[in-house]
Length: 497
Image 1 (cartoon, one colour):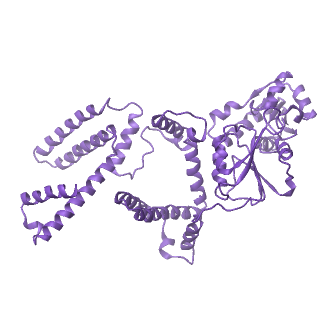
Image 2 (cartoon, rainbow, N blue to C red):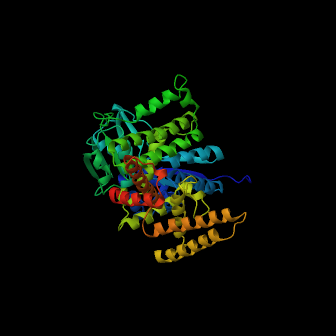
Image 3 (cartoon, rainbow, N blue to C red):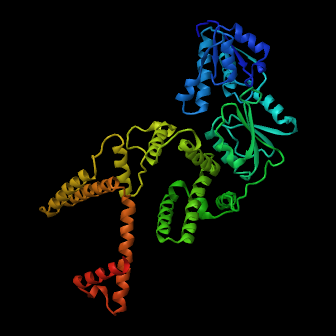
């Protein structure tokens, strides 16, 4: 620093939304301020202040640009801190009370202590006070106040007031969290804009209807009464016992083999169990499918337990991550996005994936395809990604022409003179044929991996039938000529379809 004196940051609460909720001290500061920043313009009091001749910039654009809310709050704190350090005195206005569910305020107070500038905080009547009044509840009787954007890992076990349930998307996340502990029929009370004339709305609904309400906004909170708080959801087989069994197996008193395993050593089992689920689906046997899905789930729990022991993540984090991802990638279900069919859904899905943090680290359109994906599936996935950036044939007929070209090249290499490189060239040309076949499958709407596995299963059925028939005649297959075997094969096609 050059020794230049820092300015002062005054943070004021705008109250719950009605002009009378704004304290005289807060109003006076706003009147006298030269520069005012609002965390958001989306608050009823901001419109009223404009009528009084008080206006200022907002940080609403940060919400559109940042990857998550934590980034928004940090950007706000950083921006205001830098301005104050230049010697400016600013007023920062936030909805409700500055000390309730306002992470940007906490960050700014920390910045002031760290960088040495003055921070003054002036409160107003917050939204919680208005909610207490409307619901006739006393928080000292036992009430946990939670942020809908930052729910805890466990249920507090008493009455709950969940704030910032500002959209159906957030409501869905809150609902899913509550359903881990409560029955879907549990009655909850949803409060919007408590105390604000013309905007207040209060409804008591079953928990399962929470994200179906179309009037939620940034002034919405959810109340779960104490009488029902903590009742377990009706789930006959929660995952906790499985997680506990795995933890026991990995403990000092557990199984030596299980304790020895690592993420790397378990990789073959994950692949094997995935294919066994595939086979179970093909079998059409629901009991077998149920059993194999359990084996696959065990692999997920196994990896989560290893990660938990290394203080990386646990099974709750796995469930929370996929739940949040599903909600985030289905804004047409949990948000206000409108779609016209499956094509729009897929376009939105890809756009959302690009916005997600991990995709920001990718450098190629082909990034993100698992290395160990089966060959044909990987070929099809890679070509699908290439097609999304314009690297694609106009239609399946063009691919068909390319297939004939590659087949001709393969035939030429196979028929050519023997050489040290012939086997390698045959392998390369055959690979080209398979790659084009996978692409053709994509154009005609078929999963190449599914198609080849279906063909393999059909071959197995027919061949086993052929073996049985030949054996039943007292013959051995190796004693029959190819013509005889082909006749049996033709019969197997008729018998086995």
